[in-house]
Amino acid sequence: MAKVLYIDERPAERGDMLLRLLAAGYEAVGAENGQSGLATAVRDRPDLVLCQSEMSGMSGLDVVRQLRDASKECEATLFILLSEEQNQDIREQHIKQGADDSLPNSMHFDLLNRDIASRLRIVERQTQRRERELITLYNALRKQMDMLKNELSAITAPPILEKPELADRDTFTRIATERLKAAHLNGAEAQLTLIEVPGLDALANSAGDASAKKLLADIGELLSSQAGEGAGLLEKDRFGLVHGEDVDDKDLRRSLDQLIHDSGLDTKGITAAIAPVALSADSLSPEEAARALIFAVNKFAEQGRANFTIANLQEGIAACIEDTVSRITSLRGNINGKHIELHFQPIVDLTSREPHHYEALARFPGGASPYDTIVFAEQVGMAQELDLAICQKIIEFVEENSLEITPVEVAMNLSAQSIESSVFISILRKMLAKLGNNRKQVLLEITESVQIKDYEAVSRTVQHLRQDGLRICLDDFGAGDSNFNYLRMFEVDFVKIDGVYVRDVMRSKRDQAFIRSIARLCKEIGVRTVAEFVEDEKQAGSLKNLGVDLGQGYLFGKPSAKLL
Image (tube, rainbow, N blue to C red):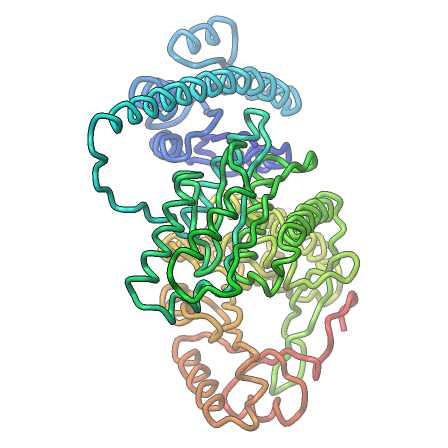
């Protein structure tokens, strides 16, 4: 997926272009002025920069010149200037001063897209050729270095070196992703081997420190000799290798078993299980294929034999990857085909028992679990696409519902990944702007399935959204470690108390104290509280007495395609 940076100081036009680029299949990034565009280009290294030539402060030509002259990171980037006035003299002047082309703003997007796609294909072919040449050169140099090492070892004593440490899981997944993409680029098959040594962890714990450390170090040295930096320790008894075609899995298993046998430890019944895995899916981009494989690797690392037994490790991993690819393809089909439906659950005032607003909940074809689907989207990097698709459905509903005599207010959920993305927020604000004053009918619920990294940036985003007329709710309050930081950093209108405290409110004094404290704190800072999973009258009465304002749960209505 090509990355395009669009620089335009006009917010509405910038948002519109980013939306069009995303819809056309590009990874789109926006910048609000020349200075911001410079920083973004150096940081993100886009394949193409589209830049308005006429901007206050730093012009489009200034941006191009500075990136051409000072930035090695962007030396392979294409630069196209867009201008209101366009003729042959202006175009030649722009090209002479560093731009690859200069086009009119009035150019229809379909024509612009064809021009961009054609240029990127040419650059991609040139890049692929250069990368193949570099890989050939690297392999030749590596071969010469190996020969030199062998010659030196014949005449000198080998140096005493510390045995290499294996990469941790995060480092391994990063390296694996890079190598898998490079393999796809060069037309090679992605080679990955997953290894489990059941009982290794227990063996290491029962043995003396020196013996256990030596065995683990010997295993690490063996795996590193096969894949270099592409060898990783995924869990205490599970390993991963991403490598070329020269690794023989049977020899590797024999070598591992020999190390275990020669360790001098009580290794009866302990043997290595190895699963060589290849991934090729024509329906996925290289990025999505890498996501699918890494998702399966993480699942293997976390669950090991709970999912994959020794006897069927290879078949289990292959099936897991096949399932992951299928789920990505299905999710993309649901997003592109607009197959997602909305169900609405009422949130009522605990005093008047009148609906205050409704939460819009996504429902997927075939009865797929909404929670599992959303978590999966986050894990494979599709959360923003999914959130945008759901938001669009909700906006369409609000537009229709605004014609009713008494329009309702609707809450939509956003993941932490989406709320942290400036491009996503820019597109969302443009979508919501079409509602005009009816934006006041929309609430945004921020969930914490993935922890927010940049509190200050999200705080600014929340302020902008509230200035647009939207109200903000912190969802599942009390379930995550960062909730109180969110409440301190973000100016919000509602807090939804996690259902784990509500379920036991009639029996647990601790849960009652927690809810009472949250309700009191929120009242003092002007934030209203919502309790979810309210299922009977006793719960509702207790929550009201504890100071909670609103309730949501089966007592008041199950999620339904129609408003209750």
